[in-house]
Length: 321
Image (tube, rainbow, N blue to C red; front, side):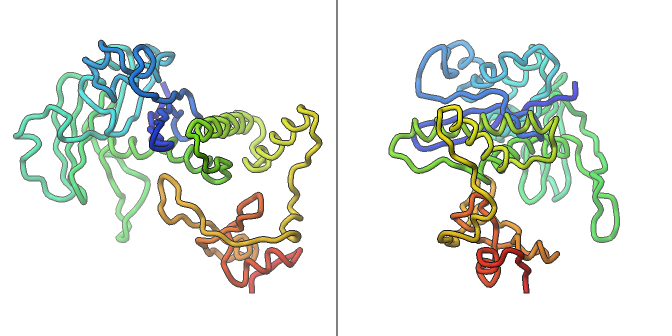
């Protein structure tokens, strides 16, 4: 089956953890729940699955409960991966692949401690379960019930023009885990979640953001021209109108009025110091990225501190010098 699912963890704050299932590469959120502590029959704390799969592995059957026995493929990170979980999924007609922690997988010392030069790999197979040890900048372990230990062309070339080849298990893992990153990125671009003393309020707004993003991704199948920001503003206006409040979505001309102040682009789960393309430089067909954005414009436009920030907010037809 072509469709894949990806499990990810998102730590909302110190008190709550949200576990998500994303459909690969699209960013669509399939299933999610909040871990609230020890709560039998609710949060992966049932004794039987915990004994067999461990605390982290017991989360998967709940997230995947409507997808098991349908031939899906699951990609997970090393917080979930174990032989017990992958065996359980295989018994339920679900293939799986994921990075693994050396101390959590039961492999012979001859395999884990044998010398391995940079760029080399070794593998072991037990029935349908493949274990791969790969040495790049550091040793990485993979478990998979999907792959063989074969190499594939990545479609890229090195500086000498040679085809870059990778293990298929690594190539596919990097490719299909992209749904996690895409969901985080699209939510972070126009995130309305504010600081709050109550973590429940923050989690509630997070799920509203996810619902808006899911709606946008479904609509995008029929209307690929609409941007997420425009869709979000229209949804807000529609909800306000339904409640009897006549509030129009902000117009682009807002950038020429009111006070505007630059701010550093906030870090995302994937980047500590993110950057955006400067919209003024882009208008002049110059590629330049900035660590600043306008904190008061609804689009949160990326802008160079000078002179682009001033041009953007004072000139109807701006051009970078």
